Length: 56
Image (tube, rainbow, N blue to C red; front, side, top):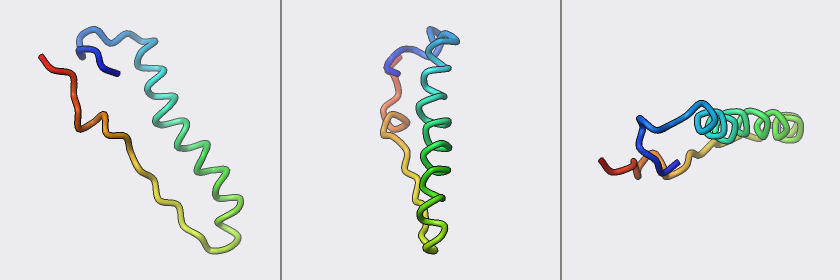
């Protein structure tokens, strides 16, 4: 997000949550339709933002 924690608004949080959580869930649900039938597996990865917090 690139902004200090105390400046995060509901809009910032919703955008982040929708991208990182809902996006993952919806993509995984769609992948299950294909990989599940063939015995495949889903490997979820996260972004590097967690390793680069906003400086204070």
